[in-house]
Length: 133
Image (cartoon, rainbow, N blue to C red; front, side, top):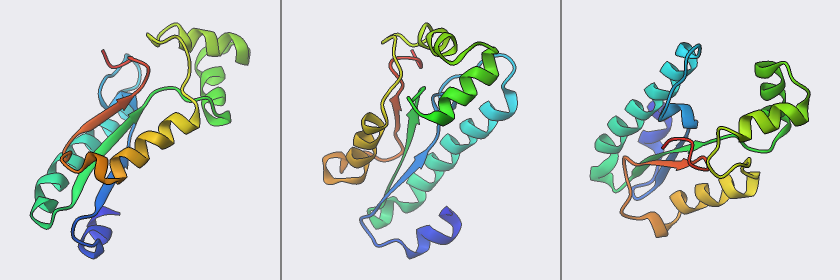
C-alpha cells in the first residue's frame, strides 16, 4: 500500500499503519505474528523519514484487545474457554482490566489523522490499556 499510495498522497498528509500491541511486545509461541507486527514498526519508521520532506507524517497505532466479535473468537480459540471466561483471562493481562471499545480506537485514529498530532511522525501510539508496559 505504501509503495503505491505514498507517491500519490498529497503533501502534508498523514499515514496511519494499524498494527497491534504485539508490535511493541511479544510472547512465547507467537513468533510469526510478532515478527510481522514488529516489521510494521520498522516500515513506519523508514516511511516517516522518507516522507518527512513532503510534510507527510507516518505513525503506527497499536491497539490491545478490543471488544469485537473477531477478538472474542481469538480469545476462545487461544484459551479453549467459553467466551466470558476467555474475556476475563485476557482482561487479567490488561492493566486497566478491560477491553477497549471500537470507538476508543477510532478516536486515536482521528487524532493521528488530524492537525492535533501535526508534530508526530515515526511514532508508535499504544492504545492497549497498558499492556505494553
